Image (tube, rainbow, N blue to C red; front, side):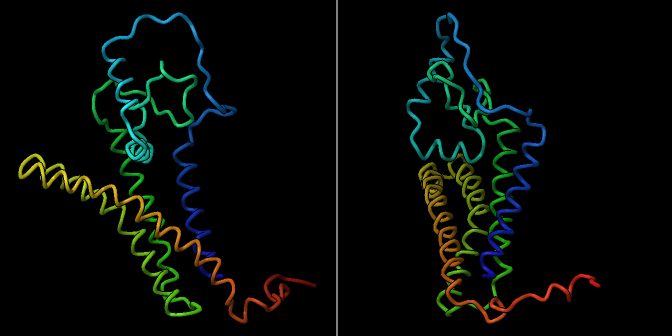
Length: 216
């Protein structure tokens, strides 16, 4: 039961972060719609954007969506409507301050969300195995986001100044980051329901609300 409370607290923090990020969102806006008209011939830049969108695989798009930079791989002339999470096109100028801000925000929120689960580190569990799994998942969810940033930065530096092969291997290891985080997240969700089968005795006691609120 305590595990479910911790997960609820974590999702509350995520909801607060979403509200902060969307604070200035216009009201009553659901889906942006395309207005079709006769379009001029594609420019070289637009042809390159179309080719990048067609070549991008699932993992590339998943990473770009996670950091909020998916607009680089979306060619609006090739789709029927604007995507729900379309952030805009940066005109091939590379990563902007907004892109790095999205990446940093994702890492911070993911780390804080994982750190919240440390509150149940020493809580009573049905067995030592379930407690170990909870602790393992907590460590994974807390360390994976900053570890991904370290791998990304050091991989780029290694590829540029030391060895392209070593830097490439470090970049390839980033592909293990999302599955590892999802495994940790899945463990905590499963344990939150498994522990409901072994609730403490206090969970079955009626609450005497008159002891907490003034009454006549």
